[in-house]
Image (cartoon, rainbow, N blue to C red; front, top):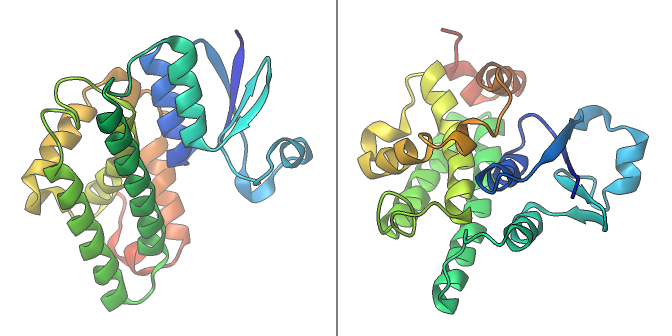
Amino acid sequence: MKLNLISFELCPYVQRSIIVLLENDIMHERTYIDLSDKPDWFKKKSPLGKVPILETPSGILFESNVICEYLNEISGSKLHPDDSFEKARNRSWIEYGSGILSLISKLYNEKDEGLFFEHYDEIREKLDLVTQERKGIYFNGEKFMIVDAVYATIFRYFNVIAKYSSLNIYKLKPDIKDWRNSLFKRPSVEGAVINDFDEKLLGFYLKRKSYLSSLLKKV
């Protein structure tokens, strides 16, 4: 089965889909587009005008959670718990992670210092809460699952912020750092982004001309 993931280089929702593809050794191609200059063919393929889009022999799928569930099913993998309640619990925290991503977009667009730190503190509290739900080196214990892929993409934002500024969320939250470290040891997580991802995300942050932009500098 030949699959093609239509992607944007910095999109965390694309990254979670790629992680699931790599975890399951699913052969695929990736087509990267510029979301600020969407090709006409993309507009016809994407009902929501967003990435990722997964092209399959049977047709097109959109929305990252749907794509991840589909990939999990076709590969016969176990990236969700078997227990019905635990599976639903995982899906709840996946949705929670999507809410954190929405807050992160507020963070890098915020121009006011006070509001910036309100967003930052709210994100820290939310990450602290979900980390308390973790049962081992990964969310469910010793086995990496889809929910871990979701939080790996969130931590990647803060990796770059910590790399280019003195704002390091992990200094105050060692449990978060432990989870992050476990996730970034996985080849699928490291392989989910382009080689110069950090530099391109830095450039994206700087273009926002936000309060975060003022904190960042190249090293």
